[in-house]
Image 1 (tube, rainbow, N blue to C red):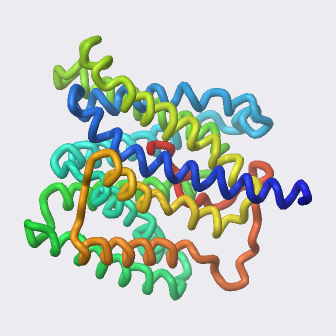
Image 2: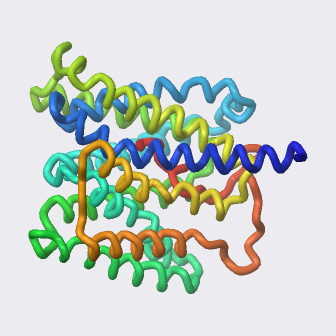
Length: 315
């Protein structure tokens, strides 16, 4: 086996592991709120996530100094603010729904929203831009209408709002020209700062016992699904082409259902599971490569369009 083939195999494993960690974070987000408020939980996870990403600054890409400090700071604040808003909405929605798998699939719709929203920004339309949402909408209807409520719930609506926020943030990052490692770390510090300010303002500062009671969910969400998962993503995307990378990373929604069933005992009806298949199909279709699009891997920092979770290391 050549070194190149070995690295590609390791890259695939790394990306799937990252997707699994992101999917598992939906479970730990729910468990973490047994002792912590959504804002307090996010404050801790963002802080840990930002700290665990700092070693990436030792990479050759990370050591590159910003050419424009003002642009770097502005982009980090905008992206971090959007990340804070989207994750906060998602966290409150999770607290209301108490269903990791369902929440994971609804949240993953941000991947579908991005190319569709791009049409309003003058981006060229692709066949997948119109086909993927059809699968996703049909799947969403089957997932939500087949439940005991028989309709979209308030928590579903909040999850869709959060997905919209993630989509807007991804578009902002797509159009950013600063170093992606600097942006990833900077936005997490901004999100952490905003979370702590809101936690303090709302009088929800956690006690030591509260933190200890949710320690492992916080560590999983902050360290594993943020710092470790992003490091795996960086390695994987260096050795796996862009389109397959995006498809592998989109498997997080599938993992959210698997881990929800394993650790929370979640069960959905047959129609809902079929709906998940439709939504997953829509996600995969949206990540298929465009015609005549060069298939590259990320061996060094260049200006390119991020895929999957490159815009937010929050899961």
